[in-house]
Length: 372
Ligand code: PMP
Image (tube, rainbow, N blue to C red; front, side, top):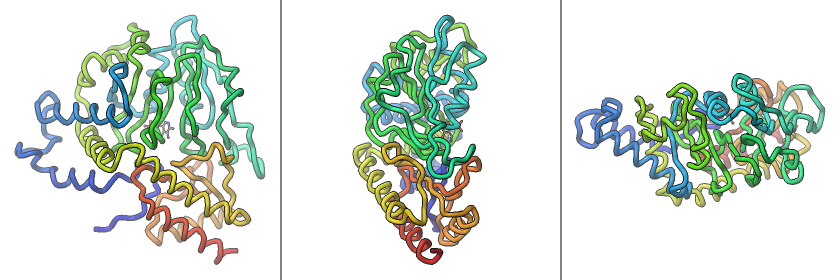
């Protein structure tokens, strides 16, 4: 079997044991004579998987009975719309912290439902050669006193914990007075998080915890109780909560595979163990980039560096291209920066091993020597 070093931004690498488990169970799930995909979502076999996935997620994240886990469809992009649909009440305004393209898109969707504003934006934080576009644009996340401008009476405050395109991340989730809603699409379960100060988390599964097609919501039940009822049934989070995410047919195979990933995550020691490996991986890569700062530029300020998506550039777009091509020949794939930013990006999600990252760092060191 051939497995490459997979640095894709999402969908992305998944743990091999979770895939192998799916492979071994694919045609005959637990002696039932059919695949899990062929089971009814109302039957016992699927229900067991469904509730196991929810229980594993709650256990790994340390969630209590005051939180509910929902599985919806439509990706994080659909939540950009359903969030204001559910929680942007008349007479209230939502505050958005703009740290990249995804938060801009989330804000854009509010206009159909109520009032929202870009309370803070870090787009002005140029470093190096300023360019109107490109990875230089969002190089940090706002924190501390900068967050004082947030309205304590807002319907909610929205922020993106990890900016997949620009390689920035909140090292600590800030506390806010208004209910805090976080897009954790690209760093959910990369480390233990204190969910008690967060009213809602949402994330597409396709980076850290499963295949695309499943979107996870973690909601504070008290916050959920404030959601609007005057919207279509399928878009009400309450509909999913009341029906254990079985209101209509859920993406059964995606949830099954996520169950495999979550079970694997628990078996390797849970989120503390995941965090330790993620730290080691990020340190190896940033360490190599910092040691070669006359050849590579990593534009993100140190305190805002992501442990999930690491972005950098060489001296020219041509050399960036050569880097990506030569790495691909060595079975290191997915390294081209996002089409809107250019440069190089390594997405080193939970399932990317330290060994993969170490190979990339060694390649990066060799490339600087031969192309200096
Ligand atoms: N938010 C963030 C931070 C993302 O990285 C992405 C996708 N890469 C999205 C939202 C959109 O997710 P989806 O494709 O699931 O709609």
